[in-house]
Image (cartoon, rainbow, N blue to C red):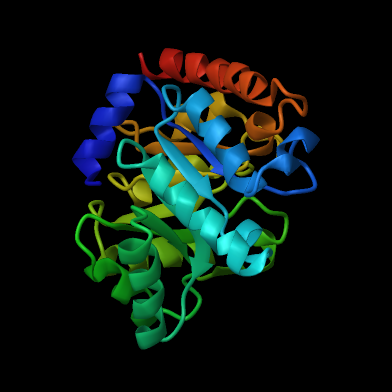
Length: 267
């Protein structure tokens, strides 16, 4: 999916909601355990219930890797079921020496047809650029993440510049708004205005709204650009909104609340 196609979907759906598919067998409704692949069945029903309200889905790869080869099969089936009408993000947080990154890119971009992958920048340019060689695909680079440990390194300062700021400046020399996005946590709303000045055209993937306490209005007012420029992720608050046979309906209700709020913020 291209940047322009993503922008078009945001306008059509009046939404910039991404739903995280961090599917845990211990948290899904018990009645799904009768299926051969309960993880995929859960994802399928969530997707069916919310696909008109969101613009992206983001499976966290760790939740599939944990179940070995069966988990990988669930991930492959989920990616295929999402299809091409939504922006598909592999939340894999990969990043290694060049030839290894190239194989990661092959796996997620070509084999599973994801549109984007989250990448850790710690190993530098040669660990990131292999992902940028794939046409109409995106690197989503970890910049300022929503977890409490982000303070350990990302907010360290040298010569008046935070590490996360250096990451953004450097990375925009490797890619551009057509193939590079940044993870900016909703738990740091006070930084969004300055980050938008650093990266005026890039999309931001924003985790931390909902269960982690991020405020949608605040990050939208400080982080939007003229094409929206935000993909706001919500996971637990939506997919685990209910735990009975009506879990998908409950997920839809919660997703609709978020989408309605986004529609107002976009107008």
